[in-house]
Amino acid sequence: DVKVTQSSRYLVKRTGEKVFLECVQDMDHENMFWYRQDPGLGLRLIYFSYDVKMKEKGDIPEGYSVSREKKERFSLILESASTNQTSMYLCASVRTGRMARSNQPQHFGDGTRLSIL
Amino acid sequence: KQEVTQIPAALSVPEGENLVLNCSFTDSAIYNLQWFRQDPGKGLTSLLLIQSSQREQTSGRLNASLDKSSGRSTLYIAASQPGDSATYLCAVRPLEDSNYQLIWGAGTKLIIKP
Image (cartoon, rainbow over all chains, first blue to last red; front, top):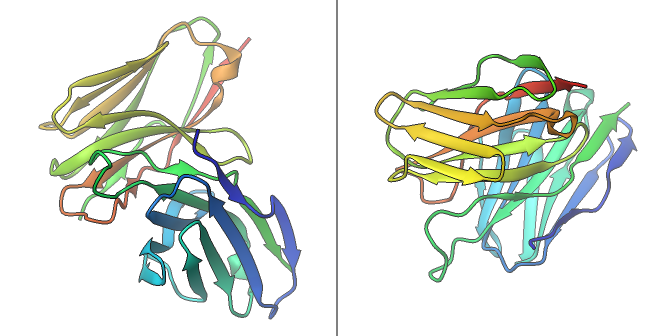
């Protein structure tokens, strides 16, 4: 089974802090995604990556950056945390390489509930 | 622009009933449609993926159908159990997408009463 691991289930930080959320997948998946989930707004894509050192902005990238130095790890960075970034953050990965079938589901971690005080 | 809608936002039914969750999308040009389950405070678990060429997929008590022409999908849950209580989300992968991105519905929160 695919395992997507997010480093923290719950995190409390202060306004202005630099915050790192880590995500690791163990199935050599090419694409990885960071979402945030808020009541009434559903899942919104922040950033995704289709290869090492490659990244693309999603729908709401403002205030965030990402890092993918190794294929298995995708980090989300809040450069200067603000209270409106309090949310549930979800990481996902999917296999997309030449040997993969074109239809593959995304696999999710358990999420990090981040509170910015 | 593709939009995905799930109605109702919440549903409460007695244990043992068969039920249907609805998902609609505005653009029929899709690779696939996926149904996920989310337990409170947790991540998402993939339930069923229907390719654009398929009409339905089954897994245990779950059956998902796809009607691309009308932009509709349903998730049928047979003989519901309290353990089925969760939020169910559907998502479509647009045909023009090359990065496996998904367009998400807001979900239906399902409560099965014992």
